[in-house]
Image (cartoon, rainbow, N blue to C red):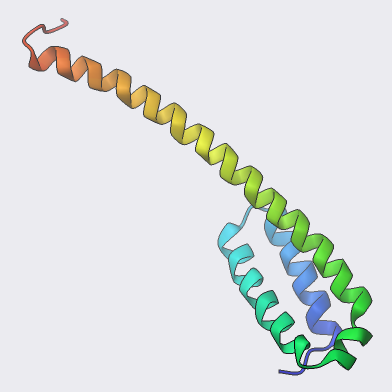
Amino acid sequence: MKVNTTQVRQLTLQLNQSYRRKEWQTVRKIDKEIYTMLAALKQQPDIAESLRREILQLKQVHLAAMTACEMEKAHLGQMLAKFQNQREGVSEYQQVEMAGGYLR
């Protein structure tokens, strides 16, 4: 796989747009593409050096995207915990009903 400036810039743009739109499946796909590209560049140090500026820009956007993913993960964790607490309240009603103490 020979990497060029256009490919790196496209990945940077796509990643930037995808994480800002919270398109997490697309972010995941692009993350895999970045991994493959960087693995190829390890075998091509001259090309990697010529793409240094573009790679650094991609790295900045990638870091921002991964930070956004972590923030979304934390937010979803909080929402799930809230739903779990609500579910426990509903469960208490069910237990009272099963014990014969119907609340009507």
